[in-house]
Structure formats: C-alpha cells, structure tokens
Length: 377
Image 1: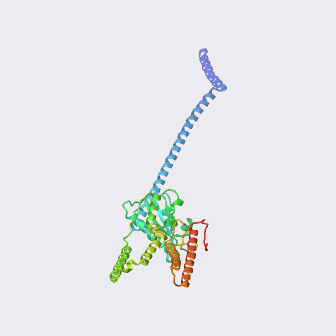
Image 2: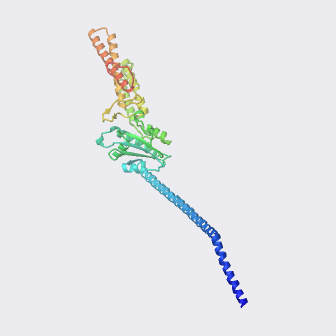
Image 3: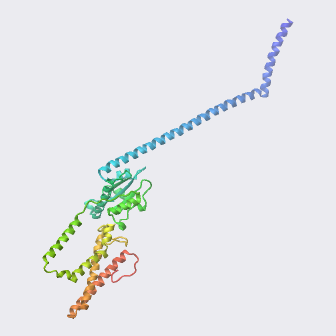
C-alpha cells in the first residue's frame, strides 16, 4: 500500500509540477513570446508571398504594356504601309493625286508619315474664272510627270491637288483666301512659312517649282518639257518672209541701207530687253493675277517680281517716251514750217511728260517708300 501510494503520489506530483510549470511559463510570458515569434514568422512569410505576388503583378503589367504598345506600333506601321501603298498605286496611274477634304485628312494630315506631299490648292472650275490656276496647274502637272518618270522616283514624295469646290473646309482650315497656292507638307512636323512657294517672287514655272521642291525635300527633279515647235515654226516663217522680201526686191536693195529701218529694229530690241522679257524667260511669272478682292492685277505689288502683261505695259510706256523725244528732236531739226514744228514740240513734250510720269508712278507703287513723283502719284 505504501509503495503504491508513493508511486501514485509521485505521478500526481509530476503531473502537478508540469501543470504548475506551464502556468508559470504562461504567467511570465514565455509561451506568449514563443507565440509572437511564430506569428512574426508567419507574417514575414505572408509578406514575402505578397511581395512576390506584387512583383509578379508589376512584371505582368509591364509585359502587358509592352505587348499592347508593340501591337499599337505594329498597327500604325500597318496603317502607314497601307497608306503608302495606296498612294504609290494611285501615283502610278496619275502623277497628281486629287484630294477632297477626307482624303486630305487621311493622307496629308494624319500621322505618322514617312513621306512628303506637295499640294497645290487651286480653283479649276470654269465658274471660278481663274486663268492663272489653269496655267499653274499645267506647270505643276509637268513637275509631277517629270518626277513620276525619273530614275529616282520613290514613295518619299507625292504630288496632290485640292480644288476649292472639293475641299472648302481645307482652305478655311489653312486660312487660304487666294489661289493657286503651293505648300509642302513634310514627313515630320508642321509646315513652316518657307514651305509655301512665294509665287509673287519666283513665279510658278515648272523649273522654279522643282527648285523649290529640292530646297524643301532634298529631292532633285529634272523637268522634262514636251517638245515645243512653235518657236522653230515662227523662226522658219520669219526667215521665209525675209527671203521672199529679198527675192521680190532683188533689183532694189536700197532699203537695207535705210537708217530708219535699222533704227526701228534697234528700238524694238531695246524695248524688249529693258521691259523685262529676259526676266520673264528665266523666272516664268504668271501673265496676270487675281487679287484677294477678286480684281485683276496687271502690275506686281513688289519690286522683286512682275507679270508678263506688266512687261508689255512698260514696253509701251518706254516707246511712248521715246516717240515724244523723237518728235521734239524732229521739231528742232526742221527749218521749213514753224507751225508744224510747234505742233511736234508740244505733242512730243506732252508724251514725254505724261508717260514718264506714269512710269514713275508705277515704279513708286512697286518700290515702296520711293519719295519722288511727277504729275501723277
């Protein structure tokens, strides 16, 4: 009994000691420390898991962004290549592409672009009565044809035309109130002031347009004009008339020694050269021009340019002044009729005074700021 009781006592005591020890550890916070450490470990593991998930999410987001950006760029490249192909196919059929408002926005204003476009804004409808527009269109067509059939032809440059009746909103958007106008739309960026051809200064001859295109795009275009036999024909007719005249007058060639004949020929040549015929031949200006108000301008408003009709006007004015000088010279040389001499002198003086004053007035209108005038302002 004693042994059994002692064994039982030791078992109860051991059990009580373990319970007391557990309570002691709980009281002093040892289990609490152990529990906190375990919780911290679990938290760190959870944080690491969350961080890994966040990194994976960011990487997935970046990957999605790169894929989306690549798809957008590919789509842009696809759209650009389609536009270039469409322009190239149309350019093979017609060197000058005709755009309305929608096509202008699609092929000229839309981005991205890897090609330049030379656009002529004009009004070719007969109701517009723009003769200069038709002349400029012929020269523009000549440049486009020369580019189309040149060895350096590529899809880096296209020529297009926008008619006012087909794209009035384009004219309004670009603030154009006259025609014709030539503009260069570069592959990158917006057109600058120099991207508009100064027709008043250089004219719209095909060679001048090609030179301006080369300045803006670094693309050289050699203009090929179709053969023009009118000059050769006129020369042949003139030679035939001279030969025929000499043949008819073969027995009397005294007129070849006539001073008046040679004087008139020399004056005609002088009037042609001093009026600007050579400048017209080099620059190719328009015959005349419509103003913004719709009126016809016969005299160019700048000293840097002129119209073809202006050349004829200046030649006539110079001829009138010379005629007046000749009349006054004849009045001084004649010794017979005093009344006739007086009439010659008065008419000659009137011609010189009036037409010289008119020439000076035209010069003042072109050379702004010129202070002198005579009779007319």
